[in-house]
Image 1 (cartoon, one colour):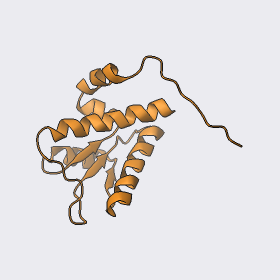
Image 2: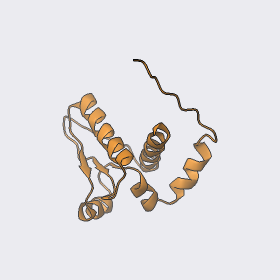
Image 3: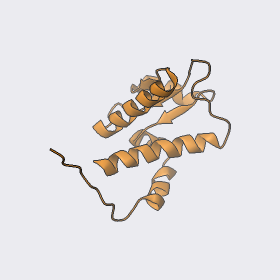
Length: 120
């Protein structure tokens, strides 16, 4: 489960990183934001959790709630905009930029170690 969350997070980071090469990214400015978080309408529970956590922590840091979009018409409209920051989470990111899968393959560990804390 942790490995899946890490993969979803890495996809979001790669999308943001690719976007950042073209210009400065301002997620929140003076208490307002046009930033959007996109997930597929068929997003997995991990993808939904990653989007929710991202929105939650941006709100905790800035006080501004970021919209999570998961309907096809809104996703299509948002992807045509070049004037706002967009976080694309999970499989939707791979669909929009298939090169991301190759980048993920280069950074993932072959035999990750997962540990659980079972304190009672």
